[in-house]
Image 1 (tube, rainbow over the protein chains, first blue to last red):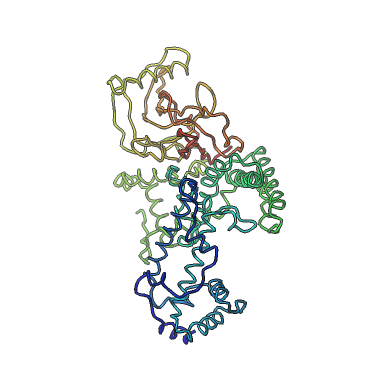
Image 2 (cartoon, each protein chain N blue to C red; image 1 turned 120 degrees about the horizontal axis):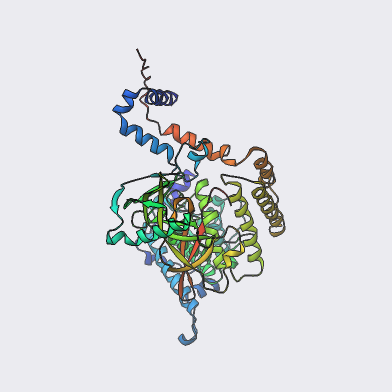
Length: 318
Length: 227
């Protein structure tokens, strides 16, 4: 790895983003071509979505150039990019792309570009740029196509959720979730964030967005709302036989639903455990006295105590 | 940490037993009690942990100011109050004080509610309508504490002037399909009405949505007590 880092330092960094665009003659794929030049039709037949796509691609192109400009030299490949990027590059150059490690792929690429006196960094950037454009084009034109079998929320839906989140006015006692949740930039969320997103924000947007859906999306929404009803009912501060029935009905429906809707996934122990919460509610009452937040609040209380590591004085009445 | 908690317990015991100390730090004691009654997370644990019900169902949170209801600004409340009290008792044997304490915020069973001008986030409420008997969404415009006397007994109550949202006029509300999905209503508000603090059920989260060309409001009730 250290040898590789030394080698990468020998490579030349392009001085401006435009250098990237002028680089070696690696034929871009048809998808890349269509992404770069999305519409050859006369302007009067161009639809609104085509224009949007083109604008999105142009905007992303600009962002890409800015990102390259800011990229520090030390972070150059292979450290900066993931294995699929190198696989893609090898594939485009007609090299063996099925090698096991990223380093091996990097070596193949290096062996190809060095004798040809091509800047490794520039070549990779050009290829990665093409790869990036194709991905973006796919995202812009057919969001559903980029989702895996069980994935539901694409970027288009997430954008609407983020927009609605900004407009929703939550009471001061509800913890607000970060506005860019779900992005790699934001990272992990706390349990409280997930709860606010799951029980408040997602139902608001998804029910409105999919109100006319009748197929799988409707089934997914119904299934999700069963989960939300169960979660909200289980977390109420009072309980009753009727509420326990509501919980049991919804959680059973939810678990049955996921078995039907996500056949590729298996039922987890947590799903099984959730089926017993109704019994716990009936036996021990509302959950707030024994769930994790109860202990978390205690920890918070103790942590917020000011201490000076000295024993307190004992007061005595004379 | 244990030391600190023990020391706090010692202090609390002294404050409870020693009147001299208690009087010397009366302001501190009052603040302490206010904090105990309050529940900033809205889960009403303060009420749950007080089975004897010593905590009042409401407490004044901040800056109360005495105002005469005969002043032009408050006259609408005077007539609304007269209506409400006469509807409640079905007779005229009640003496009302001429003024009331107007408040910006109030804590009802450990949850803070506020007027739209003081804290917008806490001003949206679901309340039990006295006329229809249904739960309705609205926004708090004013809060005041008023005293009336009936059969030589003083009754202190907190009233909220609430502007209810108009019911949804569209053909079908997709949110009604789900029990906890909330519901839609129009952005327009109806005439302000007066309710008692006991009619307040919970907060709700409003979200403006576009239905074709007009703006509507989605109401997501946030009741954490019961269905």
